Length: 162
Image (cartoon, rainbow, N blue to C red; front, side, top):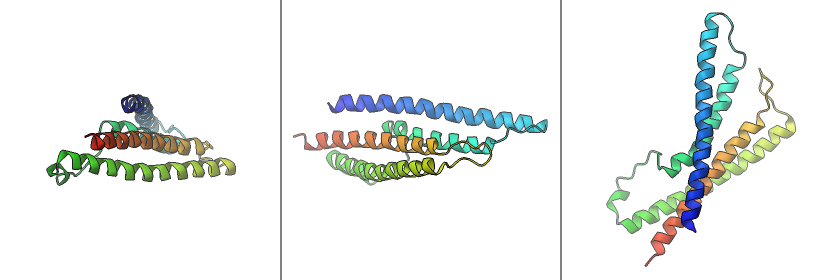
């Protein structure tokens, strides 16, 4: 069962990562087009806002994939010297703490997005609603929580295995 959950979360993280890749590609293209058009005194209005929104999408939607592939920076030279079982326990506890923290972040992001939606908050230049991007941040955080929860379960199974 844990392997199926792990596969499912890895696939979901990969889909989210493709969205993040599209966001960073959009940021690049929009910025380049804005620079070129500025040479002709025709900048693209709202470029700064859109790049900011796409940056939020990029950061949030790449969290799960980075965690699945263990791409985060880790300083674990002390943990590496411990026995394998203890390393698994430390990794599980770390994943559990991170899951709780990102769960809180996701919940608060959802609350904040709901407030932004109810108040009708929009960006200054383009008058775009802000709340969908905050919901996107929440979605990326929830996926990370799921990835970390699966890691906790996997580490727990390994630790309790006789």
